[in-house]
Image (cartoon, rainbow, N blue to C red; front, side):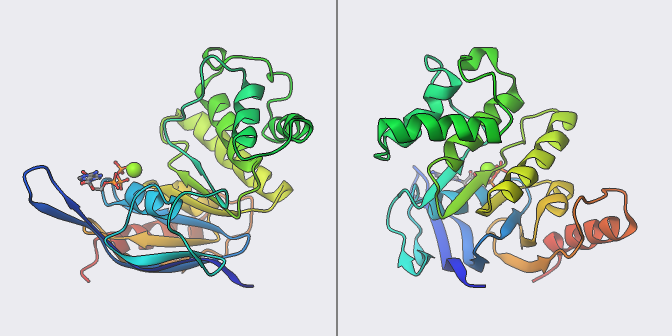
Length: 251
Ligand SMILES: Nc1ncnc2c1ncn2[C@@H]1O[C@H](COP(=O)(O)OP(=O)(O)OP(=O)(O)O)[C@@H](O)[C@H]1O
Ligand SMILES: [Mg+2]
């Protein structure tokens, strides 16, 4: 396996309006293999979104580098796609048009973007809802559109920032199964952010455990549990306890 994404010694210091500074990320290093499902797990406000935005090219790091396929990331690009926590769909466009739009702006031809958008809406379980407007879609369905919109552009790396954080517990479980099903149907490299250890353990090939702010990588843990995973299994619960404790462990 080869490494597709390299996070090399990333530091981020925000300068506040009053001139004071705030270190958020400190010497963050890890690598992601092709088709791997990596979960970045860390406590609230530790800098997870900042890290994701840096990988996406939406935020500039203070120092360090991000490489995708050994190419230095300097700005946002079609090799990455982001699924945000609070998904923003164009309310005046149907589910289909929302997905088509993301392909259109990336230069896909009309023939291509129509059939591909239909294909990816079906993949995420929205066949029959192509012509629905976002106002008619539930939170889970909107996230499905968001996943289709990111998937259809065939990025090298999918970045998902707590995509299910705003969903109720049942829908969240359902979406976790759905995202695994989608990834099995069409393999992708995923960087998935969460502050929920159970979600991390349910999904991840490896978990990157982040510390409190200023955040650094405490440990990278390979999860060898087979799918589908049982959240009440003794090994699952043991790992849950062990990884939760890592966050607060002294450096
Ligand atoms: N543009 C900014 N200017 C100053 N400080 C910022 C800026 N963006 C984020 N921060 C600060 O950086 C810290 C980390 O924020 P970030 O949103 O990356 O954390 P997070 O782990 O994603 O949080 P959450 O768990 O709430 O999603 C916070 O203290 C936040 O206030
Ligand atoms: Mg965040």
